[in-house]
Length: 322
Image (tube, rainbow, N blue to C red; front, side, top):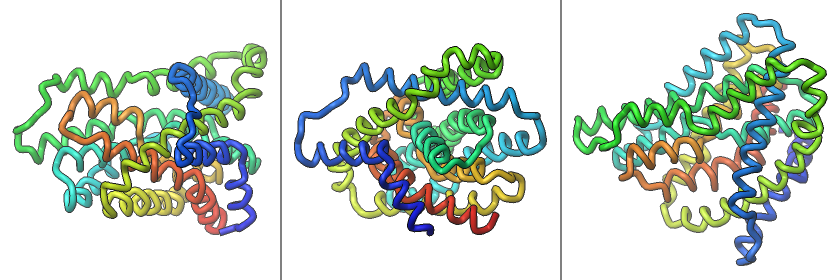
């Protein structure tokens, strides 16, 4: 791995704010971001990245790479939960194994946004259609996780919530709807119209990302203390599985994707885990699954690993086999 690249990533101001949040928790500081402000910033980040992705897509010519990217994203969202489930069943019950598997088959929008910021710092171009790939990977893993739970429960212990309601929540939850909607709006907007809101969608983006990562650091610090009590298996899974997924995709994506930036984003999507969309759906559909297990795994372990060591690792692999 390029040591200079790793140092550049670890000294990124936005990432340092993430560490500041973790340190604040360990020092028992009262530092916190108001909940409403945190929610607004997360919505802003999704809106901005979706809009910019739509603009990039508007200037791209639809080709086989875009089609293969969309299909490959869905393929990952379906297959990763299946193999992860059988690994998890060695230590966890059916409900927890299904919920964790769904989390690791789905994606983290915040990790994706951080990866885009990383690419911009390194001045590596990427395509707008990757935003659509990210959005399409949210829902399939939730469905697969629920189907695995229902299949191996043998019809017992099913959620009293109708499957229609669960699927509707998976397909139309706020983060998916906002980023897809923003993607379409960005695609339809003219260059002149996009320039008019550029100060909002682009100029202040990194500042809001820094504040949001500070909030994520505070949240991760709190979850980390809870997670340590859960044992070594969950810790190892939360690091090793993302590495396996990210490294495999970093290699395989080269068969149908040319750009380094797009391949890195694919590796990050494969390596990330959802701690927003999947927990919200599982809370409705599988109340017996423990949020104190699958949320800290994704947020307190996998997320920090990906944004610190994961991105430079996958980029190094891609550049060396490009």
